Amino acid sequence: MEDNRDNDKVEIYSQRVKAGKRTYFFDIKSTRSNDFYLTITESKKKIKEDGHYFEKHKIFLYKEDLGKFSQALLETIEHLKTELMPDYDFTQESDLRNSDNDELKWD
Image (cartoon, rainbow, N blue to C red):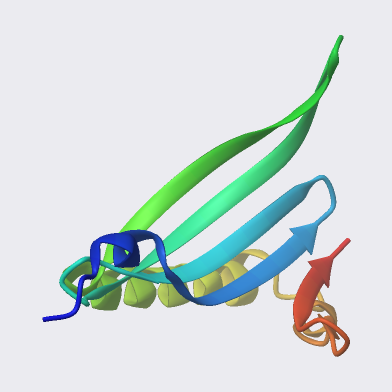
């Protein structure tokens, strides 16, 4: 049987979104039992006297929660677009893929 001890940190897929002072990471990882989960990380660069550091906040989404989470996220985004900000042009963000490194940028 194959040893999967290192698999709990293996990234299967990663997408990075730069958004001003923040960067968001959407990573699919594998568990030791070869199951998959999604992590969403917000990273903000902070300055302190002796340099800088990155403040990170992470959400882990497991397969049993992914359907409910994605449905709620889509409904919330749709409500934002249609009810709260109907005049805002959201298409500008959808065309920001940088073809050189497959990175999304929102500035």
